[in-house]
Length: 387
Image (cartoon, rainbow, N blue to C red; front, side):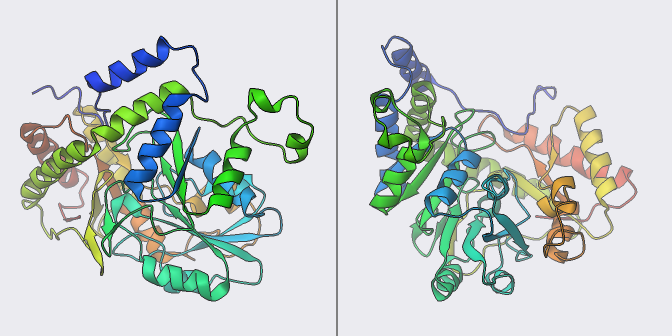
């Protein structure tokens, strides 16, 4: 067993990825070509949506979604500060104001009840994510958005394959965002996909994505300035190959999850993974443990350093947005300081992400968990760990 190479996430590359990328390299077009069209069509079918639009990143994708909805300066979007990919940063980039609402402590997702308390006259949308793979409470969130006449945007970056009320994630928002950077189970290095059933919205998103060569002679096209945020043919080739093997990869990740669960029983106070009401299946993005109350944020940092010294890459699962310098100094908006979002603060201080990918074997998982237990004891806080 090589203990020097246990990364937090590792992409799964096989002959299919190599074949499709090689096909692009030999083709005449490396951008806005047939590979992207094939990936969009295949991903829309996988997600059960009518339209898919490939873009350069999840953050840029959400920026385009907000712009397509006319959301900008003077508008507010209610969202959670607890996040991994921080796609919510697009709200700020669009000139709108993110209003942070607290999460459900058990699922880690935006709480519908707490989000309702943050909705005001300037609120134009709800942005909710399927945190680390666990679906949000989409039934109540949909009802909340409908009651206030605002858009419901779904961040499904962390939850490929998870199911809620018989439907896969990505099918609940007016539009959903998938980001394919690491540690996604479908990894293309960079890139993202927007999916929706709204034909008008899909047309606007494609317009905003990029200005094509065929548009350069048009004066009217410049009426609304687009981005240069398209997905390359190389990225689409990787995506198409990764999508073809996604179900098999998710099955292997389930086996890795089972190895973790078996080894975690040695910890004091261990609790089984939480599955919320109406959740059918969860595919975790990372294997995340929550340290007990006796641990502090600084203790977690020490554990991360100790594990790195033992050849194991780990990370704080979330650095909550409201605790980051920009938002702490951005004004007096509700939810931009520590203490206002107690459950977010609590999880943000103690959530620790462990390696989780298809390259892991049972011996490596045993080594990771044993080392985790040793370092938990060494920091002087005992070994209480909660999944």
